[in-house]
Image (cartoon, rainbow, N blue to C red; front, side):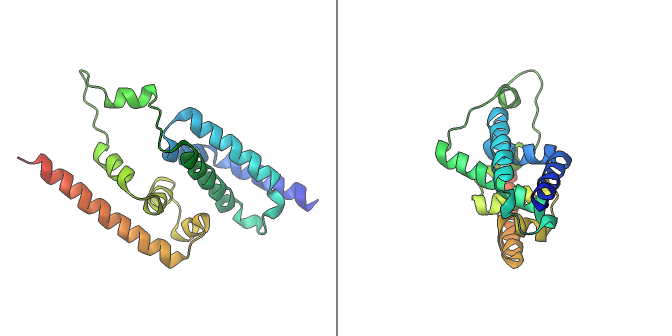
Length: 168
């Protein structure tokens, strides 16, 4: 009975947060097909290991942690091979319309080490609270706060440096 309740809670979490889950996987791999594969594998892993979830109230952070781990495993296995899809190619192509939607920020984020980038993604792009980020990354709240401030400082310096380079 308890196992069935856990599975229902997990399925409800996946349904409620499906777009966030996909976006989280995509933010790591930058490829729609790979992100879908990661989401699929994460769902499978979560359903198989649902009995390891000790606190049903923490199902969201537990599942997001699985997605993060699966994404990092994928990146380790594929050693930074990055397939560029049509959307990304169009965004970077030179055409009649210039689209510069936060390219400096995107480049600066890509240069951050994963321990900082993960926190920025979860905090600002997934709109998680600091304690939720800490739970997902299995880190101390103070560690997450420190890394968040360090990451923001690095981004601020990098973006200021990029802006200074553009000024004649």
